[in-house]
Length: 348
Ligand SMILES: Cc1ncc(COP(=O)(O)O)c(C=O)c1O
Image: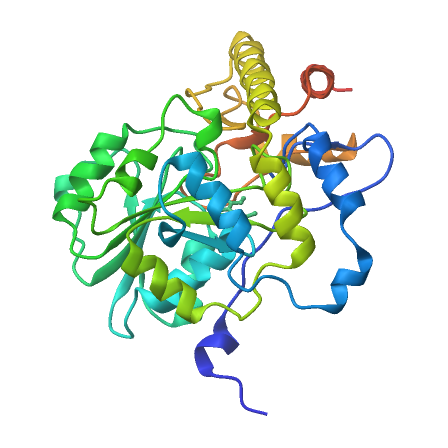
């Protein structure tokens, strides 16, 4: 059995743990702390099991129409994927030649490098916050700009991304997985008729509380969307997922209310940590990326919290190992997290 050399070498994406059981406080994978809209539960109940006999709508047409209406664009400008991860994977196939490269901020979503490894092309990371004018983008044909970024939560003004895209000859995907928790977004860039190379990507996994459903979408110029359409699996989004995501799109008020609660809890937790000597840069996401006070080893603290059934995330990379990423949960969960930190500091 032959496995290609680069796949043999591939480490693969490392996802966060999915612990279950009573008493677990799960602040490790940036899921939403609140349930999805009750309209999603109704859509699930209404979905006829007999319809599973048939293939789903291959182009997710009703859902694309609803998303297009939400953003004031045409369904031909919208692609729906099996999670935004599928869109990223397709983009790596469609917008990157064998002798080209994928670029992104560094640090950023670690899947980007894995996708480059799968495609057997280089991944080039550019220090977040560094001078964009000095980036050596030679060979990069696809740039994945996460905004707000993960794991840092840092937000840049969309006009900075627009200025970058104007000079960049390839495709820029603005990964807005967390934009609903931020003060702004780049959707106006993706829907502007003059735009040739900007695609804005969103997911139902975070603000819509539907990580288990696996639906994401992107908005961009028609020719780029058509290229994604041609290369996707025939029935990439299942019928149940389409129906439930459609219900979620139709209940913007529910999503917005949850986002507001999470933003409040985020700011409260940031304040609580700062009072305890942590360095907590501003975050516009549903997580914080914080450095514990001098003398506290982040990895040790991560392990100690885990022993107490509190799961956060530690990334051992050079740019990330002095910090911890804490997804924002309910106020009660955040209280438990802070109480656990205090107990650990006291040696308990
Ligand atoms: C920046 C970023 N993009 C994309 C995704 C994937 O989202 P989805 O669940 O839609 O595949 C994540 C998930 O954590 C993410 O952090």
